[in-house]
Image (tube, rainbow, N blue to C red; front, top):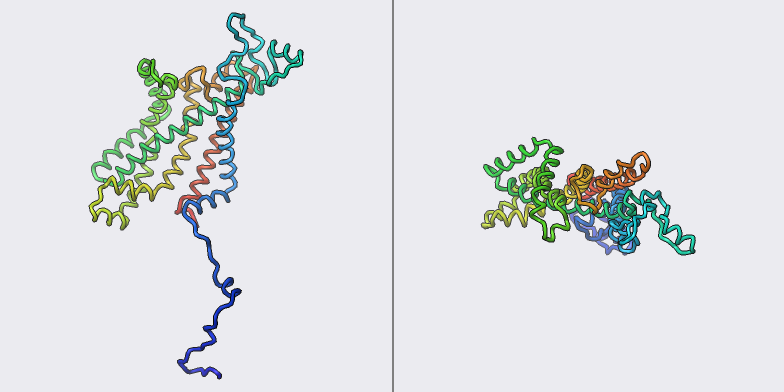
Length: 352
């Protein structure tokens, strides 16, 4: 029966059941995903950021695992034995060189583990000192960024949500801290805290950590939270005008509950990205403070203190300065590139 042109009758041929091929062609289902999964996929596609992440993981795992089986200690002076004169043949060994006693063992057919980077002026294996220095620098950078993250998020969220006089006072404090010369204030505060904390922590478990490291954490807590707080404040100012915040306020929710349950979770991507970018800054600060003698306490090494000690024999053993400098550069560069990759992957404003 032919269909008439000017009629309101329904063409039943248009409602025939679709075949399996038609369904596969018409319906293209996308498996369920989340914001985190999508961000990880975008991060994986960013080859530079992914390679930087692998470099960071390899360096961090190596600094933890290698000391467990390495035959030398970062503080063990190879040429010093109780009741015997100091064997100076272990001092300032070049890479893959051996001391007098070790060479005698090798000549006798024994196997001796090589010194990959040689030894320093005190006869300590330089490779394991670089490994421990990397561990210390990474730990300081991580914990310092956590301190900055907690303080900056707390103060920035309070300033952004409550506004008014609270915001005015906090922002004036931030402006004052921003006006201070960073380098000078860090050096002065580190020196003052070192003298003040040394008698206080004597005989306590904190003495093993050292007054220099504790003073470094205090410097970060006092000075380096301002950038994080301003960033979080800007995010909170835009989020507090949303309808779900107004709804929570209408139901009688307290400001602390709204900040904790609504505002901070909605800007968590910015918080994570900023924290990742804060780690290389903390590592660089620790490195130059250790270079100036305000970092970790001897004999515990850090990359900055190793570079500082290498200056004494720069003309004879330049590789002692080059090795920690290259490790610092590699860590900071990898963290910066990885932080940029996190920002590109998890910031919704940058996603197409």
